[in-house]
Amino acid sequence: MLPTAEQVLAEERLAFTDRIIGLEQQVRELQQTPLATPSEAVAMESSYALLTSTTTWRAGRVVMLPVRVLRAVQRRVIR
Image (cartoon, rainbow, N blue to C red; front, top):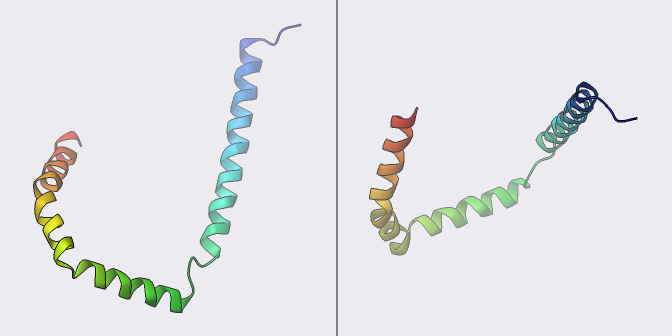
């Protein structure tokens, strides 16, 4: 006997709800665990500061400025 369309839909909704509950639990677990130790965070911040102070970084920002402006305008127009 084949399941009806309503039964299939109900089964899909149940599977979808189960998936959502599982993903919510994963998010809660990830929020509770720190991503980096304090010393790793300091090292990453100093590494980022060093990177953003380079001439290459600044030149790339200047070159990509028109693209960033167009994206910002596009986001505002679409919304």
